[in-house]
Image: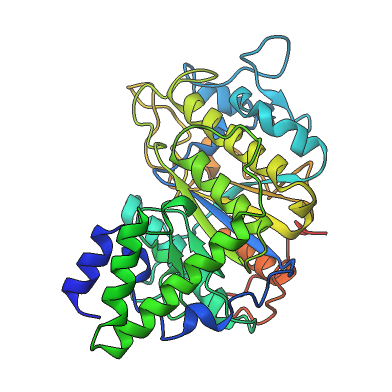
Length: 406
């Protein structure tokens, strides 16, 4: 498909399908998984590097308060601006209170001191490394979630891999087809007249790839329209911004049984170099949106919660010591979340390395004790049934699993 046709499709709102889907792919499995209750992994990327030390707070480590005199969150106790006790050692940031019932139910776990072993402090490099799954190796051409799709031997379906993002993220780029949708409502022409004109344009094209692709495109639209009409709009109250809307769309696709296996969305705004705040402020506002979105998604899944594992990732953590602007700079280890019916939650996983000066990474950061690929490998293996992980995470052996999934 040439550049002018791609640009035309993008101008109509349909450009997200013009990136090389093979002929007849979209119709090959129309209706093939209508009644299937397949397993789904959802990845949420927190772009900007979240401050994990103020999220799952080691309030029993006295060094935490010594290093953060103005932005530390107070120990659990009476009052709305104190950490929420998790296990007597760790506390949850008060803005994450909507997640506490999920934790108490055993469907939410945290992995502290986790992340990428690469020591880069570049947002762009660190995000790339986590998305391609090969820290320190930039030449990897595809994303690890795409490799999961490519390895799984399931019935092809147009909605196996979906990103609710403005453009295809690197984590889903690769040989396996994946869709990028801004919303389900936009997965159709903006009006009937435009739709008819587009169909005619496709049908009369002398380019067989363009013509067949158009047939497949409209077949997929019709299939989704038929299925989504059976799924009532959610009554859950998601956050009003893009992150909440993306999670809401993912929940609808899961409940529509369209064969969704991998979903991706993102939430930015975590680069807190100045005026980060403690229990309130800049970070708290980001965490509140995150918590409200994740909690709404969890409730929205209903009985499908056992079929879904949601995983959060952020490129690196923040410095253990606050800076002169009452913020934190680019650090190393962070914290990951895992949510789902099969998650063995109500627990903080990972070995705590401590915050004493002699154990800080490079004298400034929380040290890494759990490689993010250990967490991802367990979820891919235990939840999606992908046993051979050598292609998913090349040159990496995860070793013993953490035991995140039951």
